[in-house]
Image (cartoon, rainbow, N blue to C red):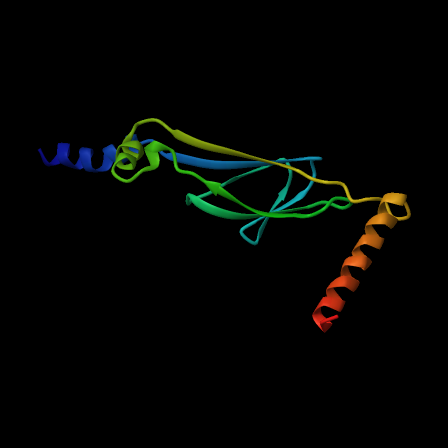
Length: 137
C-alpha cells in the first residue's frame, strides 16, 4: 500500500505535460534589433519565451529606418485563466501558446535628397514656431 502511494506521489507529476509560451517578432525589413522590456533579445525574425501575460514594451531599431517604440499585449487564452489552468498544467500533453507580432518599419529619407531637405526645412520651421510661441510672440 505504501509502495503504491509512493509511486502515485512521485509518478503523477512526471505524467503532467507543461505549458510553453513563445512570442515571435518579425519586421519588414527583417534584421531589426529587438528590445523587449529593456532586454535585447536579438534581430528579427526572433522567437523567445515569456512567462507572464500582460503588456510588453517593444523597441525595434535598424539603420536607415525610423526606430519603433511601442507596447504590445500578450492576452491569455482561455486555458490560462485561473482554475482552468490547473487542469491545463495537469494535462498529460504539452500546451503551446504562440504569439506573433509583426512590425512594418518606415525608411528614413536619404541625406541630400529633395525629400530629406524638405523634411529638414519643415523641422526648422516647426522649431522656430515653438520657440516663438514659448517667448509669447
